Image 1 (tube, one colour):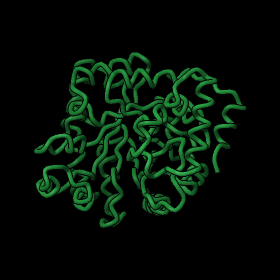
Image 2: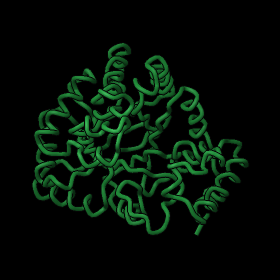
Image 3: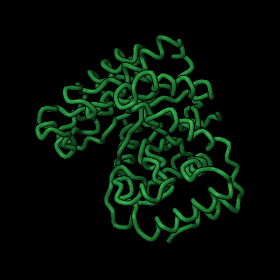
Image 4: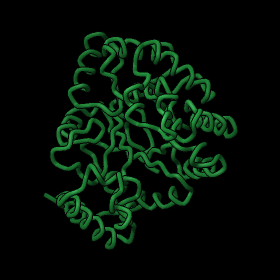
Length: 335
């Protein structure tokens, strides 16, 4: 597996990151460990988790299962020095009883009651994450959900303290508007605080439909911003949108398609199917290969396999050789 530079840090990270969101919950421990082992054997070393993963899988959970599993795996394998470890804070709901009041997770209530990015919250969150991960530091610490109720100065000063204490080497942001990123960068420059080196957003081959307002999905403005600010690396979550590229029937009515549906998506899906057949790979693998080839901005796809089979289905993307003509055909498909 190749590596790419993270921002301008000089840090080399695996070009394909492994998302560990449902490890230890929806993915049982033995299968999760097998995925981690296979990823490490393939040369992968960029692991992504969060303190909230995955409270929604079981009533009574406050999250942390993923971090705990990774901590056990790192202790067993002794691979901590081989891993670039990323985790996140700010997205554990404060009142989980209210979230589960109807018997199922109410995501509207969850979003309204996230713990947020206040200084005390982040300091307690990073300590909890380090305890569960069994390490004295993480390599990348994200604000998981942009918190507009807390002054950015408070959040950034707290993150600077976390870095200064050696608990995180770098910081990142997730689910953020472009104007917020610019405000963050300005404040960091003014106060000498460490600026984000990674932006984790939802990003795939399909483009969000016209007129959709969405803070988490990359749009043209954000791509343009990232092209001009190479100190920020785009870490793309949900790169294959729950695997919908492989299965037309699965796309019908699937929630992952809702932000993208329309003529532009249909044209791009047709292009993916055509080029995938030429390359002899699945459409899902082709989309990952297309993302891996992006250089302006650089993209690190973040896969989140639920099963070992799904993980192994993603690996052929590393070996796909697209011609310039195929790459251009994919780029220019759609409206």
